[in-house]
Length: 274
Image (cartoon, rainbow, N blue to C red):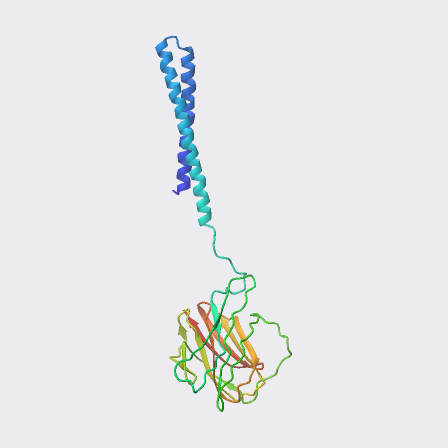
């Protein structure tokens, strides 16, 4: 039995006691007025006074119990009120922070990668803003790479604004993709895998060859088959080399990365965040 029910029962008992005290006071007052013997009159008058005092006491107790009952109902209502906002059906909730970086990795840089990320906090909205993604920072075979500008995020279901770009160059190749939480120099995945814990940055490392400057390069990330981020830009890093992209996953689930050149899907890779 919960607290509001107990308080309501006690308040009802207190109200009943108040009614009984009122009946006793009325009867004693009537007996005091009609009694013949002085001692009986005095006794009934005293009893009527005690009954009136009891009425006041029981009224106060009833008021306290009813007040406690109302307060417990309000408290239970507050505790049962959901605190988290909901997300419109069909749109993924944004619960994390995604980073992107434009600092290149050169073959002349020994040791681990030093990236300076810019963080963008994501909040749940009725129309969520997709997270930003990393841009490729390749190392061409013949020269050092040039830093690229930060990508501009686009909606998760974009409406094409340009005509079809056609297929990729005949000899263009990307991949295979290796996923890891660390990369070394020259660009390589350290301890690659397919299952990672939450809250860590995931790097996607891949080779490329047969590329042409000016073709459109796109990287699209999916969580449970729902697009969560993409980057699209003209290619400007030469014929062949190695590149990487990275993402801070916004939640647990099955992730997939697709790499396009023009309108051709050249390679894809997947991993899981638990």
